[in-house]
Image (cartoon, rainbow, N blue to C red; front, side, top):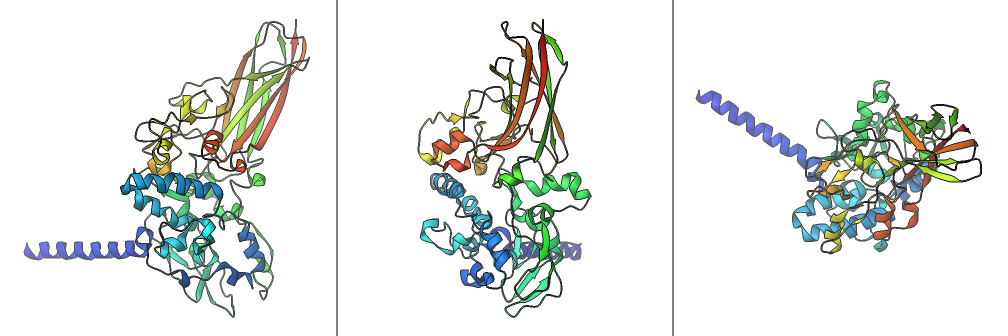
Length: 449
């Protein structure tokens, strides 16, 4: 009996020690474990990897810390919130594990503002990614990567030689788990506030072995370095939600009427189909709390008069958050902004009755929030999954005086990276809340007597 107890206790100690050792090598345990100088600056890579450097330099990877909305959200909301609630500071510091990883590794949190030009500005740099050797946990998330800076650089290709560094092939660089380290995120309430890689894993593309890199790092014939042989090279474009070319056409839109000829005193019904033809994850994804994807439908009669059509409700739980309304939300922004009894801002800021494809985030008070660290629960998930088709109907009672003849219906799918009312309230530059055209469709009927 004594021996069994001792064996159990000793085994527990070994397990606990092993677990702590793992945690110290990745995730929160990374804080302050390295120095900035352990990592080479991207400009050092530029001298040989010229094309790849400039591809990275124009991507959001290089701007993960300096991008205007990220700076405003971090300093004006997250950091300010943590100043009022000190228990949030470790969580807010953790933002840097993905957005300014070198600063987090160096223990430089809260990092200097971008205008001060510190190495935090390097964002997700070349040497950070190419010194990752693994991750902890069954589901990589919240910067769970293990990084081993030094002369050896890791990648997806074997047998490469360089005068500046050693190279080594790691299978991790061919797996989506690499991306999951930062594109899956669980907040302090246990809510998955980012789940892009998990969405991919649950969808059809994972079963067909079509990984993230296939779309976001497409391959082309070329040289990965000046002295390299020609080969298929992964383009370090990382184009996604901030690339209009990537967003455009991601959802195919078609529409048709229930009848081609309609008497002037009868209701008209048109049906719209929306098919996620390109993305291996749901649309929108990532910072879902910020995103707006909505369908706007209009009718134009034979004399050029225009009418706005409202979507037919389907009656599912939580649907009220997926139909645009004249409602206020995001009241918890008042906490970091120091505004007592803040009434909030417009929840949607688009035409009332438009269909919105979103998943709302709710704060501990049950109010919609764009502060993912303050998200206690999620609402209905009405986004468009990979290869999923959503069908929306619009039933319209024509005005009594509508002229006889052709009526044209126009459906337009629009996208915003940030709710406009939030952008305006926080003085975010307009390009973050501008309307990005996704797709459109048209159909028609003939109004008869």
